[in-house]
Image 1: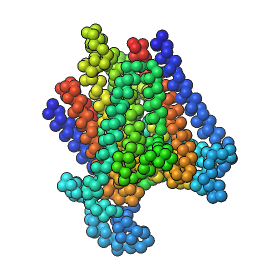
Image 2: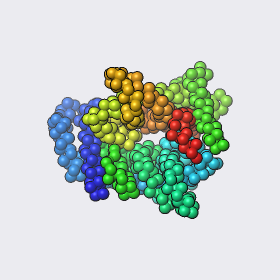
Image 3: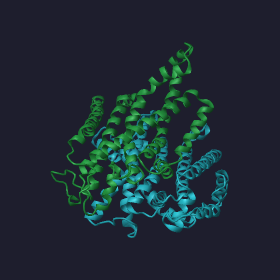
Image 4: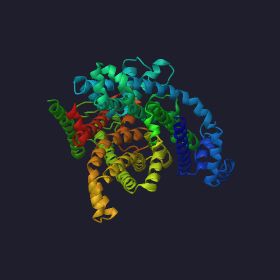
Length: 319
Length: 281
């Protein structure tokens, strides 16, 4: 088991390394000179006033004229020490900004993730147990509808209804504590629940068709008892895997939702850094999010391995 | 009895989805000739009108007919979705079939590439690409296609590997067919059904992610209408004129719903495993 975890973490570290390279080199290919972009934000605010001399000074100051591979090496060494460079627009270390914003995204993301799971998994089990009956149909139609609605639009509609019309909840920001987290959280949850319900449903159906469930029934256990005693271990792995993938959806969705609700998290930071062409900042945000996503996938694999030793005894599987 | 009930329901999804799609196609084809208003004509005397007979979806902050803009926006969104679907499908199927059929180190390398792409959440990867390339419709299409190809690649690879084990494949090799010919004549026809189902099912999500990127201002640029962009335009008026965001969003949701239902119906129809399950229920 420990060997399996070690292997899994190592391969993830490899992926993360390639991810960081890719992010770095792609970001440096941004059309427009980095020095120019930096100067427009840092010193002048407009592009017309910049002279060639200024560009040269900036290039020298930030060592922008050296080969990209050297720049990457230095950046990587810095990154390992927790230094991701300086944000051009905020003029602060990227790391500090990330540390400042990450908690907000985590609060929102985890709350939406776990509340979503808490609702979606039981609903999925219900749809499977009452398959093809009214409840199943209603939940399925609801989830198809929910998966067809654009999240950002849903957010706006919720704001219009609950904040503008009923005035129950704040429009945006996070000054009203618990009240202000309700709408972004609900929007994110609705984005992930349809898939989770569907996976749970098909996984439970799968398990219910197995012989051991029939045996459990023959022993005199009720369906729920049997599911609890014998089913859980077998129906959870697909659900866990999908949940880890949905973490990606939540992370990606947070960019949009945080923008709609002005939530001061990493998504919002990423969006602002794209708009301002703040390469260092963007790089830091993308890497942080990729790291979070990879971590959630590792957690899912380890959980699955713990539930089902076959996973790590008999050959690995793809990340 | 249960089996029959299931089959009616299965057709129902296909029918509802198909009906919605027919309406969408009608609007796509005939919408522009039915519109009496220019989607780009600015007239401040007409601004922020509530929905009425003349302007069924009202007017926006610059007095343009929201209905006309939605009709043209739908066209743009659909164009993007279909182009992205085609590009990602071709890339994904090529990579998947190559990886699955050739196997060995080719498979290993291609799968590692995929692993790296999959290490980013979809939206984040698209945003990072757009952040680098800059906004605009062309880059939006590139970004979306670069994100979506993995879905096809995964499916095509698995299916190719499954087909490779079939007996008729052995026969085809024994008959002296070349690799290319085998792929063309025996592998592709075997997976085309699933590709079509996946392609249909992927249009809904592509419309949504395309709209998301435009909503963030990184896709299609103003003043051209696109569904996500139209929703964004209404953001400033959520207190005074909610209809500006409401209707483009409804149309986006309806279009996506049509494709999702239709794809779902197709999937139920083609997936033999589900049929077995329905019988065993």
